[in-house]
Image (tube, one colour):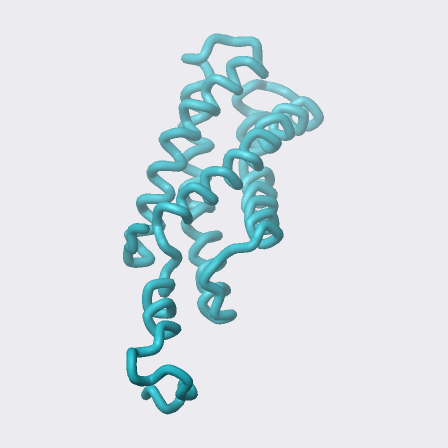
Length: 162
């Protein structure tokens, strides 16, 4: 696994995630709106900009919570909560954009957003799972090293190793 500093990790995560997201969003929005893909590219890029800001804020707060609670891995339940909370916030931020761009009412925008939300809920979950497999969580290497006793210290309490 590759270890990155927290800020570098967030930048790599967001950049990679959004490049894939813009391409997928353009195609999905084109299908949902019935228009050509080039008409959906600007809104996909705008949503990406909103998502980048939200992603940075959300994941900064989420990882701070993980550090405070001394988590070094993410369970299936925690990954699900992470994806649902992230997508729920993004839903609230982007709904007005869909209404304005596609000249639709709230109900049509909600249906469009719901379709995208379902796709991105799974995409976020899978992307983050793969990302965390490749890139260690911040602090994971330090804790793994601390958990491995030196050859002559086996059986000593942690306090004796300091």
